[in-house]
Length: 308
Image 1 (tube, rainbow, N blue to C red):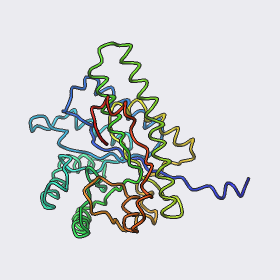
Image 2: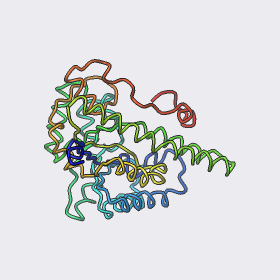
Image 3: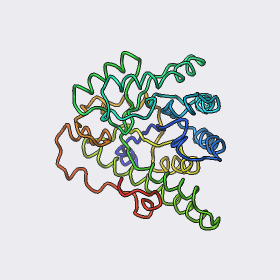
Image 4: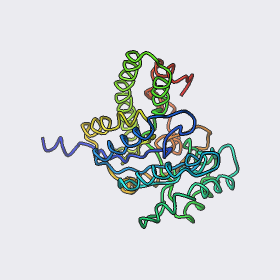
């Protein structure tokens, strides 16, 4: 038994949550927002996992005016013991603008965040590029990295990428449009039942690929969003991940893994996780990327999406 345990990989993972204070805030009516927000934070606190949440400050505003209630949502995350990072002001796409304009949006994205963190003696130190678009050339990535370092930021990569947001869109669509209470509850239950296995399948896939690429299991970084689906499911997802032998660690600890010193070799336009980026730098065969778990067709239909 001892030898078997010695051979077990060291499964460590950091949880990150994008699009704070809430995904799709302002895009749709969310009458249950306060309850869902409180439920998500309470679930994460009960799970006792470190979290970094990434803020889009545009979501703090209505008609250009910062809303104190939405700022309070960020304060709730901070006061729960979670760290807050910068996700640009407007969730903007580096592919669609100049680097200079992008950098200005990053700075605009800390106008509220920096003073909010200063209240408790903290500073923002993590930046997550929207859509995982981190620059389509080594020169752009290097220039962005220099800018971020000058402002005290480090990029927060993602190794466990997924289309959780499509499941969340489907969940919201059912909540918004299904008028038959029994059918509504049945569909939401079906989505919750399918979501956790989907996320675990993604975890398994990236675990296998990272072991194949690196010859060992690196500390992973998981991407999720602040939404109703996770408010209802994140506690079970964390517990199921722990049953698989994973320990949740801070983002800071995860990024001390030597894997994060590898070159980002991706110059394309898709939102690509870092395991694929490292693989591209190594010029691995296309077969490496095969068989990634996909969102089922019935979920895509509920979400109104034709492709991931």
